[in-house]
Picture 1 (cartoon, rainbow, N blue to C red):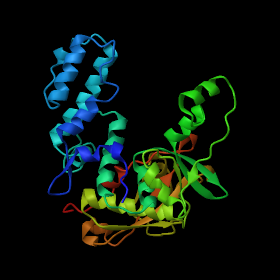
Picture 2 (picture 1 turned 90 degrees about the horizontal axis):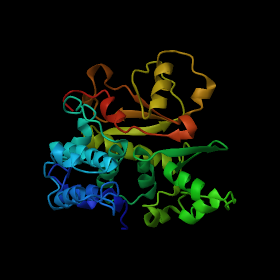
Picture 3 (picture 1 turned 30 degrees about the vertical axis):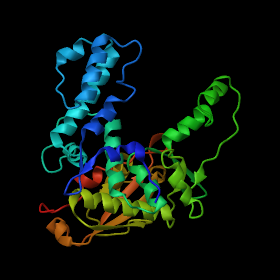
Length: 341
């Protein structure tokens, strides 16, 4: 079976006995090889020396004085950001534990401020591990929603999601890199390049394009993409909480006993909160809802006793600039889990 998401760093990690991803020296070295911290021609000797030392011993303690000796202020700040992330990983030992510590799982919220890109990268590599052996390209493409923002287009009632970064690249270069950017800057129109919508007929192409993130996902009700997302959410929840759940798409919430809901992003959270509280929600806001889901626990003992047997409703919505930015952590902190789970 073809490989996928090599860029996640999955192969630089080691699995623990309880199926977690343990941080390794090679994984840490990958961060010190990022262009933001790799020395350039203008780098001072102190910066070069620190980089060489970290490549040799990526877990070494870096004293504040070592950073202050760097001549380039931007380089110093970049090192501080990466070292802050490294220290967070080392405090917890595994990617999962480091991620969970940020959202009050198994303990108090850790007062650490990480660059958003690091959160996405943790989700990326965790999902790469969870989807090892997956043979369904729809599920892999749907999983991208959890760590890459999506541009939403609605055509004749069909919900199409394209990677925001890819769309921005095509908008600025037409897909032709630096040459395309020069053409755009010269105000010369580029031919339109259409991204491929994933279908059952072309889904096999995902394997060779997985690192490009350039296939459009059809998230319309009843299509394979939406079902695939449900399976990914089930896997994500089970890995972090141990609770087995069933997630299914629904077209509306018609439940007089609506008891609990979780928004999968900030926009759907606000809309669902208002609907639950009986507030009037405009048609314009309702139109931002892309998908609704019904979540049920296979074992009701895993739920809070007062909610046992009741469905949990999930929402997914687009926000400003027609962007979807999922927050997978919401599923870990907002589900009504029993304390024993």
